[in-house]
Image (cartoon, rainbow, N blue to C red):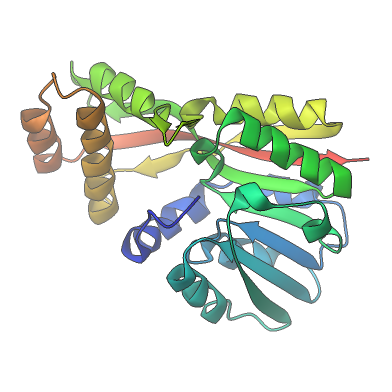
Amino acid sequence: MTGEFSETWLGLREPADAAARAGDLVALLPEPVRTVRDLGCGTGSLGRWLAPQLPGPQHWIMADRDPVLLEYAAANMPFAGVTVETSLGDVTELTAADLADTDLVTCSALLDLLTEDEVGDLAAVCAASGTPALFTLSVAGTVALEPGQAEDEAVEAAFNAHQRRTVGGRRLLGPDAPDVAKAAFEKAGATVVTRPSPWRLGPELPELTAEWLRGWVAAAQDQRPDLRFDRYLAGRLEHLPTATVGHVDLLAIFG
């Protein structure tokens, strides 16, 4: 479910992603973790964050629909004792057989792009293989801006509606993803732990904050063309706010 994200954007957000992820969940992972399958891996930023925190040799299977991103991900895991292979395909095609020798399934900023049925299928596949899952940075639908403005609430509501839009007959989960995933994995028999993992943006990260604002407002405008957010965006870009963008990390363990 990637392919729609540029290498530039993924690179820009990587430091904020790393700072936001709930590192305490790593300590809860069942050992050993030797083979990791990273779903919708993008440029491999999750691997670069997680691999140094895991002991011993590791083999990463980078899975994505975008061959360009896969090539980048495979070439940019510069850690001793870490080997990488790539898997071109869609997360919705994952089977229990794919996970037969996998110790951990991971993803980052992916679940909100799936449907409820697809997340249910993913939980069932992990359950069938007994594979733990660490899913990071699922959109939670909350944005807190300082200083606040009157239009903030309307933009947030329109953005969240856009995240839940129907595309090609698929109704995306958007900010419903954390709750849906938790319920699906618990139904499949997992013990589930969640943690907030908010982005912290602001004037100290001007390029990322500005790019996030443009994308946030553009999605809201696409959802509500009857509302005009041009002046709102221009003002926000002129004086960058501090932004707390809600995400949720989830760890599911079977057995």
